[in-house]
Image (cartoon, rainbow, N blue to C red; front, top):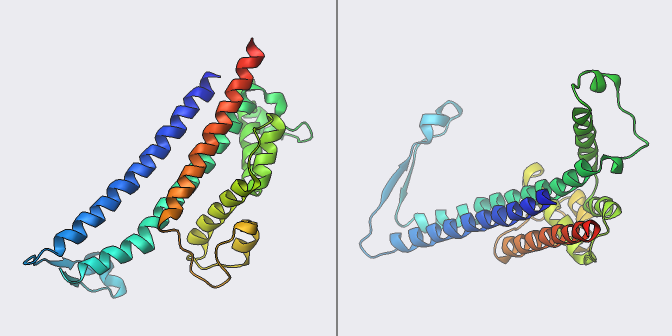
Length: 243
């Protein structure tokens, strides 16, 4: 139970740090944009692309005060929100599977009894605990390749979860699909995104995905609230069982 309580603290702190980074970076863009628009502000910056990209034909680029607001806007919309979204999806995945890891470590009998372990894994392990950790790692890696609905189904079979709105699970599926599209397909929507997102798909094939605006904030809120709800419900069950 103590591990779960510590995990709850980690969830809240990790997502707070992610949102704090977003807020402070937003402020930096805002302050910089306002500063260069002050009358009389004359800035000339030379980006030394040739120092690291000369071998592939990149040359230095001069940027003036008049150019900067557009550069700030492009960087924010095309890269900043994308990085924020990728980070918070990865954070959700990691913490979600930490919940499962804690439950399996506490009661290894929850592992599938139909699966086998190879001799090498046994002989290369010094202790029984090390073998169990290998089995847990294998189990988690297999689940990670399944879809989000199956993630929740797996967890629900171990510990009955509080009722979770199916639309929230679809939104998480879409958020993960959006992250995958950003990483693996340059942000261009394909059929894989449509299939993974289900009824929560926000774009059609060929469109460029957009994770800017309120989207990152709304997904952040869904992630942290759902994780805390799940952990709290498991902690309550543990407390009831121990009394």
